[in-house]
Image (cartoon, rainbow, N blue to C red; front, side, top):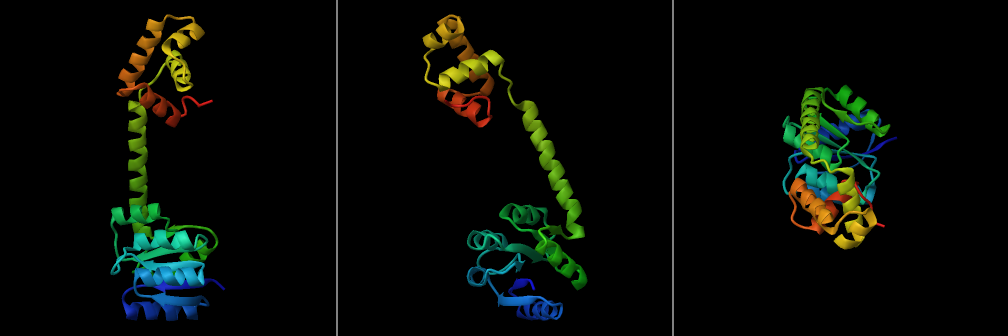
Length: 216
């Protein structure tokens, strides 16, 4: 039997949902009307699933999600809300919620969502699914644009940066690569110009972050 926690600041809604869930065979281990109460109960009860209202007094639902997952990492949190905002949806997913369900969903469908999440799945209300695809598409498009704008370093420039990262001077790099010290300095200047950076250290940090080089 799955153990649930119901969190909503409207007592009548909370009581009605709890009664319906218990009739459906779930073990509702607690109810809370605000974020602090939800976090406290999640810590003491370690429920399988928390059904959580998004908009409550004090902490927002997203803040509560993050706090619950910090103290009960095996708990799945489902936001049960009336908000159809893309921003709320994205914030909930980023916060770690496993579900984003609108309150007008039929109860039988909510039961299916709970069972799906209990089995390791994730769920979004059909009305929000299209918005989730739109947000994902926008994100992917943004990543494509960023990648297209990303400066490309030549093989020689990456080689020079790798030696800079390992503490070599321009003269030492020139000796190792059989090029003049001035040519090394020109490579470094070109690297900084391409990347829009101002120092060797910044260039090295960029190259490490982008997995262009590794530090020995």
